[in-house]
Image 1 (cartoon, rainbow, N blue to C red):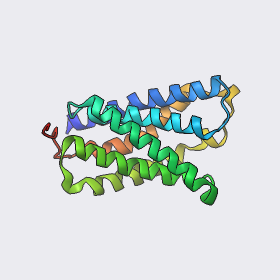
Image 2: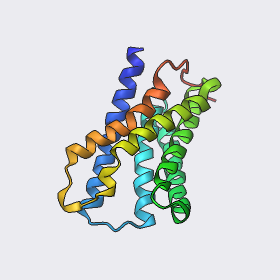
Image 3: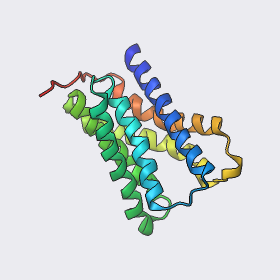
Image 4: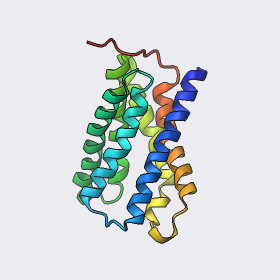
Length: 177
C-alpha cells in the first residue's frame, strides 16, 4: 500500500513538473493556441504519464511510447470536440486520456479484470480535480504566471488519476513476449 501511494505521488509530481515546463514554454514563447502546439503539449504531457506508468512495470520506454500515442489521441479529441462543445471539450478529452492511460497500464502490468473501472475512477476523480483547478487556463495571462501555483494545480489534477491506477492494484509487470 505504501509503495502504491509513493508511486502515485511520485508520478503526479514528476508529470506536474513536465506539465509546468510545458506551460513555461507555451507562455515564454507567447505561443498562440494552435492545434499543432496543443497536440505537442498533449503528447509531451502523456509521454511523461506513460513513462510514469511504465516505470513500475519495468517498461518505462514502452510506457512513454504508449503515452505519446495516448497524448496525441486525447489532444486531437479536443480539437474534434471543441467546435461542437466549446471549452468543455477539454474535460471530455481529459476523461478519454485517463481511460486510455488505464488501458496502457493494463497492457504494461496486466491485472485486466478492473482496468475499465480503474480508468473510469481515474477519469472521474482526476476530471473533478482538473475542473477544480482549471482556472489557471481560463484566466491565462502569459505575463503573470505563477509557476509554483501551476505546479501545485497540475499535481492536484493528476494525483487522483494515479491513485486510482496504483492503489490496491493487483497488477504486476506483464510478462514480456
